[in-house]
Image (cartoon, rainbow, N blue to C red):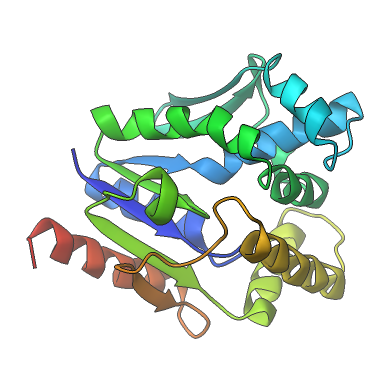
Length: 223
């Protein structure tokens, strides 16, 4: 099996780029951030503070989080309910960033993530794929972009969905999440030593996908 690990901060385009590359290669795409978002959503629904480690540790023993593929598209199930769209709000995004700092939550989801790589050629994206989840991945990529560029992209994405959003608030959330992700004690966001660093700030989506595909092709050819 061939594994590609893609890491990077929120809004760097990981999911869109990884999903597109996986489709081109016929690989399975695994969005690990969706799993943490599902846990964050469960906390919000239960009224549990995302800072309450003890309550969250109890919660993850009571919930079911699954990734399933319907017509080749990844869907996220929380206790059997498809929450693929419900986990894409800013509130859930921030909740996911906080709960991801909890070691018990990371362990809860770790085996689920690794299981896909044993039976499929995959492209998996997240915050610690190349460093923790799949340290043996044949290709590791770290996607990044300036906070301002990421805020612009996120604002456009949400407005295209018909949502009324504040670009400055989104920028502040991105900066805050970057700090949380890079300063957490458990599996902080960082590039693996052998990762290819790709800055997408000045790249179009097509150029970003091609840069990622180039790294993957070289890895598959043994270069």
